[in-house]
Image (cartoon, rainbow, N blue to C red; front, side):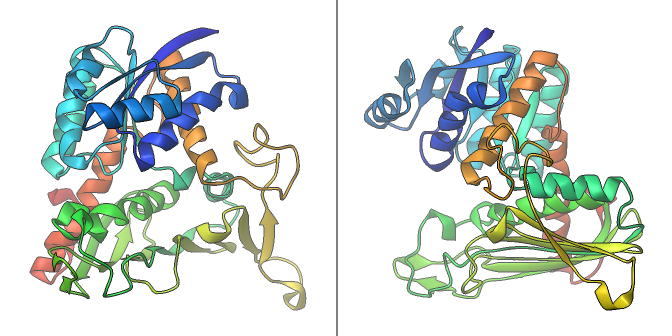
Amino acid sequence: MAEIGIGILGGGYMGKAHAVAMSSVGAIFDTALKPRLEMVCATTPASAERYRAAYGFARATDDWQVLVNDPKVEAVVIATPQETHREIAEAAFKLGKPVFCEKPLGASLEDSAAMVAAAQAAGVVNMVGFNYIRTPASQFARKLIADGEIGDITWFRGEHTEDFYADPQAPATWRTTGMANGTMGDLAPHMINGALALMGPITRLIGAHETVHHTRPGGEVTNDDHAQMMCRFENGAMGQMYFSRVSTGRKMGYAYEISGTKGAIRFDQEDQNALWLYRMEGPEATRGFTKILTGPAHPDYAPFCQGPGHGTGYQDQIIIEAKDFLEAIAAGKPLWPTFHDGHEVNRVIAATLASADAGTWIDIDKF
């Protein structure tokens, strides 16, 4: 098994998740490439060294250029704020290094377009981090839809709702400043990506966003607390989505409902190991949604556990991402979702914000 040196930029919430994933993915999935935690980068020498010792990296630095340019770092994982994504990715691509970048891709539509162009020019593997759509249940939902199991799709409803800012006394932080850190920049990309994965491209939409609590202890809120949209998919289906960080009681409300001419699907990330499936068949008296507990028969489940219904968790989603990234590098071919897919999400976000400003329907192809 060949080794590959991994450099991770950022050691906090997502940096830790990716470090743990790279440490364990080879044992779980028996990947052709075995990751070696070569270097971690953080904002100060002290924090970088702390992450190095905690996660098992060989070396640490507080300079992202040192990490990217190091010859022992053969693939780069970007888990830093959006405004840093473009410069780091472009530098890595110039050296021919594969890049995995956390969502959203860059801090603007211009950033993500430039990152896609750089990836294409370099011709190297690139991937963007949308982990929730990788649960075995949601992967199975994609297969059911693609196989026509619920017929022609007529309607989609999706949400990404949490309540970490539902309390108006929660203090102002970096999350309450700048649209890139608001709900449309933070939570919406996950469900928009999920909608595109499950339903295909969006052609038109009308959106709105709102700040619910304009001030918080410590400062003014300059971005959105929640947002919504109605949309039309390329396949003709109608859709609606809602995103919120003030949805009281919701902890991980990544959820969707899909209706078709032969059946329907429901999913809620707070119960991520279950998928609800309705089939329009048999006597009316016995029809109803069936709860399917994920198990070894579902995508990417068996390597974690041989027992149906035992379940996978959040960290396992990141391990699946790591497996996909390594497989793409080994094959030398792109694997969904690439930077292009991340840019498509950003196009939908830009269109939603423009629609909210104009108060009218917007065609996606304008972005």
